[in-house]
Length: 483
Image (cartoon, rainbow, N blue to C red; front, side, top):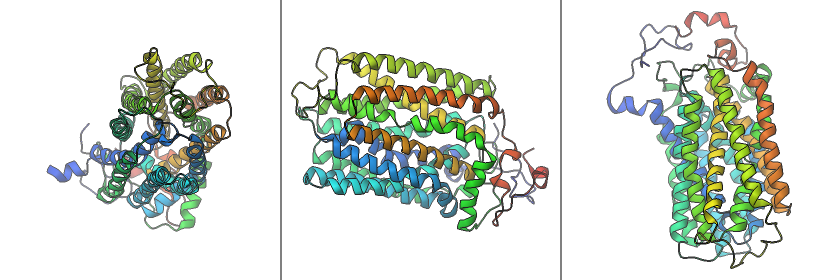
């Protein structure tokens, strides 16, 4: 589509169509470039965190401290994320991203401390609680920008771009770990692995301040990204807007079971499969392959959700069907392995019989892990696309992203706690399967009644809210809507 379009609703007196500037300035302010920068913020923070978690137990011999750290993390994450959209809308996305990124450096530093001082478990758990607060901020800002930058026909593509770059963090992190531990037959990672991760996360903290101001951004069709009336709202107005987002678009509640399930499966995949069965170098290889497969899964799902020859509702149901198929494939396959071992049968941390990549039968097990990576990225891509189909307003999407990460983190906290207290692996596996299918069933009414081919101004309540919290009528803005 052309980069030229009409003015947006906060520019009622503009008479000239928007023309993207040429050269480097135009490239810098292009939404694809900014989405890529957003991906690198998460590459250096959550991506490396995922690589560490993907090793099982954060790369430690005893996974219990790591599991409890994750419980603390996801508990505070769940609480903070619910309100993080209001913080993001008040402070701005760049500052919110910067504050959020700092927590990942602290948490990885805590793992280094634990490797040096085995009794530093309390510090790791405290760092997890701090990271939960930071992560709530980061992911709310990230979701707002990633879903607001694209046009309605590009949302799957933008999620795929972000998810691919973000998961390169997991790929690079796992590659670092694999290189560090290539010749190791032990079950924990070296200090050098943690130091490498720490340096990369510290680099990531600076990226948000190099990003463009979202209020100066235009989509590829020329529409302004930020069109809200509010310029300097009070904190009370921002928190009121959270309630307005829920009250005026209650269909978001139907996505909550899908959100809840969206990180629950990590516990079984990382600790109860990868961490339980394999030695450290094989866990590192599995993690590398897992995060690499996520790139292809997100691209595939993004393509399905953006096929232009089908209307948006049709694409939504096709994507839903693909997710159902993937859930069944992964969990029928996984059950064939899970029924052959228990927590007690693999409980010896330094067991020399942990599976190595040179062992017979390893190929089938790593292929299952590849499909687990596909499922994860396809699930997250679809969840963001569904939220993006409900709104184009970055402030409303910040609240939706906050709801997503809050409910997701509540589920993750429960799952990691179940693992920490020693719930049988089969119980955690069965709950994962049930929650994924349940989330897909619950979302069906939203797809049927709420997903439309385009989002109208009537759906964008927060756009029409001013600094005092008053919501203006659609008719006041209709003359200056996109032509």
